[in-house]
Length: 154
Image (cartoon, rainbow, N blue to C red; front, side, top):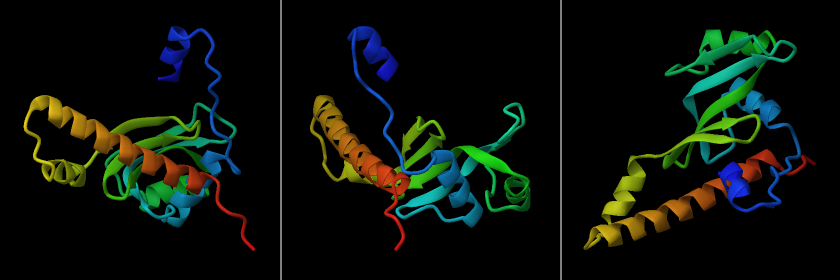
């Protein structure tokens, strides 16, 4: 999205948000411990890379991430480069260690929210969908960046 905006608007001073720790290190900790910060849950996919060898990649899809094969790859020194997360049981996403969000998908609970509004036309339905999606993504991003910038422990 930012690439397209930069092409459209000659100068767009957009940069990645700063995090207190490396996203890859945090996601590796979440996966090793099996518990990402609430309200996130682990999804069923991840990509692990060896720290010193970028060509050594292990990809797990539709997989139990707390299983022995994933955990042994982590114990051998691989770090998470992509991790599927589920936010508040409403949105699934693949988060990269470069902070790119891929494959954002609204889950069934979102559809239930939409059905409660009873739109009278297709245009009204699209307005409601856009409003609900914008609000949910905004809340999800707030929670995500709160997880990436945890308060220091005392």
